[in-house]
Amino acid sequence: MNARDHDHDHDHQVVPSDPALRTKALESLLVEKGLVDPAALDLLVDAFENKIGPRNGARVVARAWMDPVYKKRLLSDGGAAIAELGFAGAQGEHLVVVENTPKVHNLVVCTLCSCYPWPVLGLPPVWYKSAPYRSRAVIDPRGVLREFGLDLPEDVEVQVWDSTAEIRYLVLPERPAGTEKMTEDEVAALVTRDAMIGVARVAAPQAGAA
Amino acid sequence: MNGIHDMGGMHGMGSIRHDPIHHNPIRHEENEPVFHEAWEGRVYAITRALGAWNKWNIDASRHAIELLPPADYLRMSYYEKWLARNVELLIQRGMVTRVEVETGQPAPGSQKATPPLTAADATATAARRGSFMRPEAPAQARFKVGQRVRARNINPEGHTRLPRYARGKAGTVMRHHGIFVFPDTNAHFLGEQPQHLYSVRFAAQDLWGDHASARDSIHLDMWDSYLEHA
Image 1 (cartoon, chains in turn red, purple):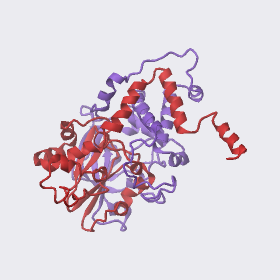
Image 2 (cartoon, each protein chain N blue to C red; image 1 turned 60 degrees about the horizontal axis):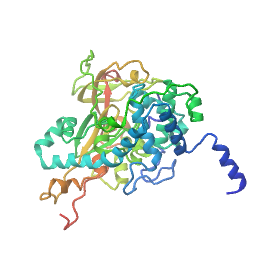
Image 3 (tube, each protein chain N blue to C red; image 1 turned 90 degrees about the vertical axis):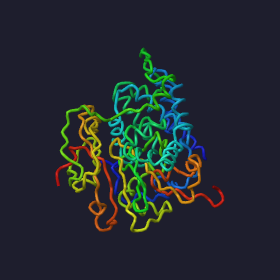
Image 4 (cartoon, rainbow over the protein chains, first blue to last red; image 1 turned 90 degrees about the horizontal axis):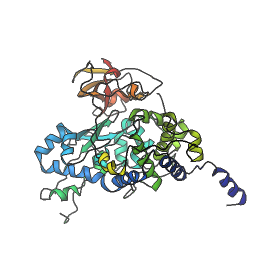
């Protein structure tokens, strides 16, 4: 960096352009004005970094695989069945679970923003919020799935769910073969976030792992 | 509004593996962190904590992001957009002034408020099951499951959740969700004006032409006034 660039950087620090600095400035202003409680912010960050994430959704899927009566409740009233397992909260007010079968594959997107079922999947990954995914999932779902490594046969119907309202969608993936003797905890460990969005299948366990 | 946020069906945004605007491969991030940098978590938490003031609603907050200049919308990361949105809403609703944001200091003589969301209730709030349903609202359901419908060709300058790609297209009502807050008015503080909400299935070919698979479909949730009989 030469001297001129150095001066240039300093010019911009009058109004910090770095989002980290602007966030820090905003937080301290809001704390000073009594608009937010920093300890509450700490707890919210901790909740989403450590407690609310796709492991919650995996519990739901595993229960549905193990218990056909639960699965029936889950598909008819997703929110209530998910709340039974203790998962609820913002962006999970109205949950609908859509089931993958050998002939139907479901894919969830939010083309208008980045709606996502927080209580069961946590906060969305960067690609879910990106322009490429949001623009293409509805016009070329099969192409998108191929980029995720999932090449669906033509006789499988793709159903895309564009989350335009406050209904949040969770995909119930197919239970992979070779898991019949596994426990609920063991099958839950196989379920990935991507499978519950619908961009992947749940892979069968590695030979010898079960 | 016919804004940049309404991206369903657009071309040129890149592939899932390569995003030309941000020049980063966005798919195969192993063990992706919830927040890539600490400030993102703070922005997320500030957004939730400010929500507890009830000075705006989820629809107004989505609309504030839609109102970002299109070039900024594409360039900014997700949480940069949230940060910009928070600042705009705080100013718009009279909670801070632009001068306060620029200086980082409360205006001389301004009174200190008491935050509605405290550490004592933050965890419970994160897990509370709210609702956007308004089952008691006096709304008529004009459509039934199984009926053919057409999404109206509307182009409001304000907020709407009817994407451009579905307007004028015919589909089938698959599910009746109940009566829900109507974002098109709620975003502008014109009241919740609840309406019946339906899941409508559109054949992919009806939206995109013969290029699409004859088997595939796109499902959108649509409020009663977005629809007409087909």
